[in-house]
Image (cartoon, rainbow, N blue to C red):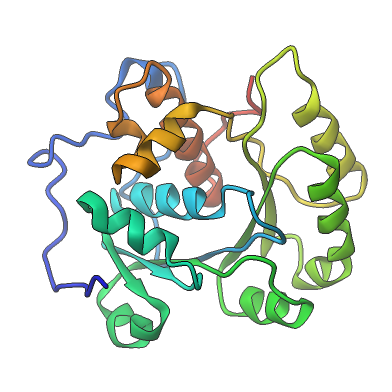
Length: 243
């Protein structure tokens, strides 16, 4: 288990990590990562296989570019901690039982929750954060599960929870478009950006690194999707729906 250590704000130039210097980002309006206030983000999925931990990890990584960020692993499988322990992320990760002790040392906190929370759990999670993010893959079973929790989610308020479409297949497949239209018709808030389906994410998890650090032709594009999502969280990005 990894225990966070007190450390100064990361020197991104020393790490050779400049999140938006890649040519793929040059034509995109991306967030100013020096203007964010303190934020608590919770990532919760209503069933397995929704890219919940992948989303929590990469959102935390991008928030770290602004200020010290703690990723709290509340999943019994400890997927985020296991991923982190392979090689180590440029931000801290702790078990949820350590969160109270260490959270005071961080500006931003991202919670990776257990999958399939109850209705009561959803309401508690949403009440304890600035934004509850619900990853959703564009398939019928995932959509049915989400609608079963619609009442609980809507009680949280549109500004407090938002659906993030993940593992969206490339065109000409229209799965993502159909599910997005269905959610919008139902009045559910959805991120403008899709997280596209890339093998680079699987490579990153297996290697214990962020997707930007894997040897894959689509690594930069995969990273840019989450960069746009974080921009939306803080209202700094104008990137539209993917692609």
